Length: 209
Image (cartoon, rainbow, N blue to C red; front, side, top):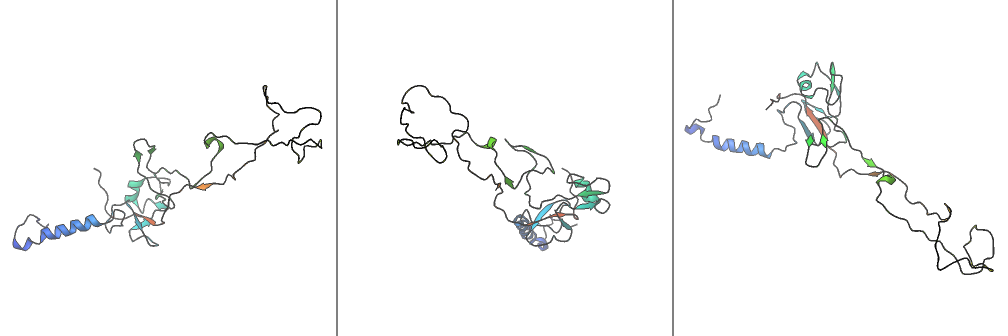
């Protein structure tokens, strides 16, 4: 065991070495894959495979007998039968989120999956609004008794319009408003960059606080 309190001349460079090691540790990215990771920790890589001692976090079914340490940490939180198999977390196409309840936010459980890539609004989700409609007429005398392709017109023998008096509703369907929109789903996903998530299957067993 090295005595870090030793004050001989031979140990004078030690503070500088410790400072350099501290700066190196502080500069290491939080998401980087460590060579001596905690078992069950997750990291990201920008290449096409996970390093030795890691497995891709892709929901694979794992053998309990071959991964007893990892199973003791994950259990069946992410799947498996709990007797011979368990599953790894599946982070393909998903973003991790902190567990617990933030101020004014929903409670998130460990292993909970939710969310969707696309959404489609329903009438119940639209804000209250109105649609305008126009009923057109002409002041010329009428010349046909067919409503197809024609407009209300002036009658030759009697008045059809009034500038005063109470009104009443016309029969349903007498005036229609054309529909708009196609009801297509639209994406609600934030801008993203695809990377590979890896979970440590070997390494240091984490101690509980």
